[in-house]
Image 1 (cartoon, rainbow, N blue to C red):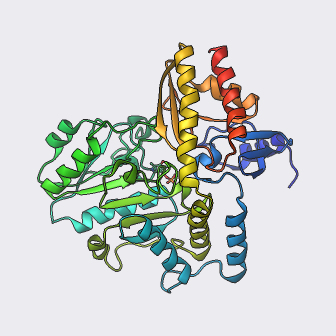
Image 2 (cartoon, rainbow, N blue to C red; image 1 turned 180 degrees about the vertical axis):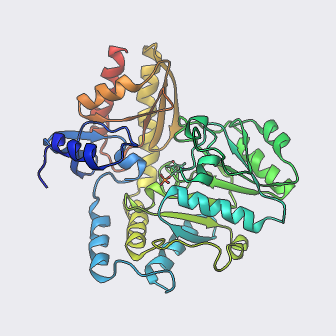
Length: 395
Ligand SMILES: *Cc1c(COP(=O)(O)O)cnc(C)c1O
């Protein structure tokens, strides 16, 4: 493989469906917080793998676990038992609320499983799920319907019936939206794609109380916040509010495609035999990467480091906020930080990329960083210097 970026772009123009907006650069290999393009340029990556690569690119312990696994067994179907999947489920369960796991291959699939489970578990006639404006739950028909953002719905109608939208943080609206057909409330404890939105104080506690009172299931989509991203294993632990069902993907395998739904023990029988499946779900390769990811977080103390990283990034960004007129707000926790601007942020992503730092801008105005939790602090500062310089230059 030795084509130039331009040659690779030409291949895409001819043969790949153009449903993504892509930067005109082909990436070839990476190492930790760094990624290289076909021309040999080195970038600092503050958004590695769109938030999937918890340790940046090709972390050694995960690569070694994968190498060991691929030589023994690539894939066996879920009509058999395999030790790796069992151990992985145990490790996730022991670090969360002691539930059981269903494995799949992506965030949308994990949420799809959660949506099915809420319908299967709830009494007959209860099927509605309350979700929140600016949420993001995936692109399958059920999960894109759960995603309360009109821009993702255009042309797809009719959407799946049974989703009711409320403003994020508005407990009164949720109370009013619950009726006899409501089965569950589903949300990201911290909204990611919607702009790194923290829940207002008391909101998650309030939802938990509402669910307990009204016999509803509380589903947390931790696809972006899970597995160490926030400095806790799961963001629900940061807030001290435990869901009944939790979905995971992105980080859980350090960049190997995988997803999982965890539910409390008593819910597990409701996803009864024959009602749901995933051919590749929980395969030995994904499971090995999942196990290696958890071990690596613990061995190197990355939960603590993610917390420190978050404080460091926020301290620097708050300085920008004090000095620069265009910075409106700084929020997030751990290795998940958003810096909201008063103006469109697209030009800053472009300017940073020209200066070899990769960042993301979501929801138009929010600079979003999901850095690798093992990013050395001097590299972190080098990258933040580039973002700061870009912001100082103005739009
Ligand atoms: C990315 C994301 C999803 C969708 O995950 P896919 O793997 O792209 O299907 C769902 N929920 C949240 C919170 C996400 O960030």
